Amino acid sequence: MLTQNKTRLFEKEKIDYTLRTIVSLLNSVLDPQLNSLKINFKVIDHNSSSQNLEKIENIFKKFKTKYLLINLDVTKFKDKINEINQRGDKVTSNQISNMANIHQSLLEAKKCDDLVYFVEDDYLHKKDSLKEMIFTYERIASQINNDIIICPADYPYLYAKADLTQNFLGHKYHWRKVQETLCTFLTSRKLIDTYWDKYVSMCQTEHAPFEKPMHEIYKKELCISPIPSLALHFTNINSIFGLSPNVNWKQVWEENEV
Image (cartoon, rainbow, N blue to C red):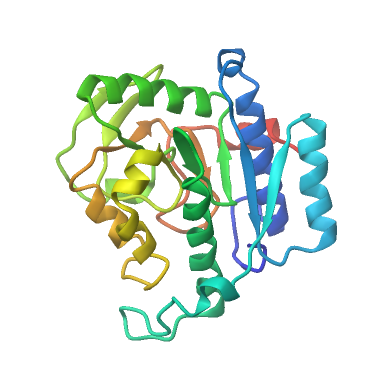
């Protein structure tokens, strides 16, 4: 979604963050320990220019990686979206396309065999992010004998409350239980099926907060985030959802230059 206009860290055009998001994921997949895994990439696009789509195409070509481009048809979902949100305001056109995008992503998740990773288009990942998430998923899910949800970002807003938590030892990182995330997370196809109505409700009504249905899921299922962070969310530069602490993000930014 390249129509958003925000002042972000490094003050670049939105497409720059999207391209580096893709590069960072593809760099992460290069880890030799992931060679035995079947990893599929799907890009859901909404009204990008042919020039920007060509830039995305060139990145996948450079990494010799196949991907599926899905052109989002908002009209398929628009009639299912309530025009007024839970705050009593009219839902914006940007939010409608966002909700349609999430709905399309959930439908794609239905086609997955095992794990699915939903990634918004402005999350820069460290090189070891995917390996750490997958190996940690395997370890902790086996430990508690249940599927889990993994959030890659150590969001600063989660430190605003003095909540009790649980700590877990992952592959190379420590992880902690969290009760809230945004819409970038990894989980199993099984959990998506189990809570299908909850997830789809985010695509029908703009809740307050938007991710409220997911937070209700986290009251029943374990959701964890890493310490320190594996990914940085390039939202508004002064946002509490943004700059995760104790990581040299300028170095990570430069490592994923397009």
